Image 1: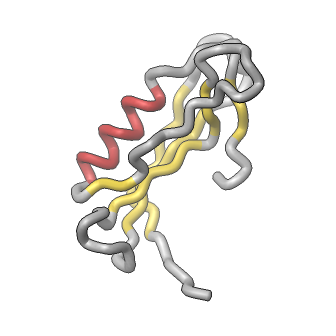
Image 2: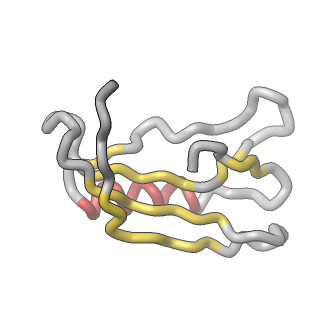
Length: 93
């Protein structure tokens, strides 16, 4: 089994109106990732659901960036789409 290490570069806390807990995000550096993917990786503690359907979770499609700014922008874009009613915890965060 391969082991990858990630160095956390930034952590962000988002207060979503109507939620009684913060949504947390982070951007990390992983030098072991392929160059075509980029070595910057972002995660977020929750996923939003645009509908109340059981399978309606919206998972981010681009978790990597070739620059810190690109990964941060992707995190911020995803975080801006949260609604107060439909949020699920990401167990892998």
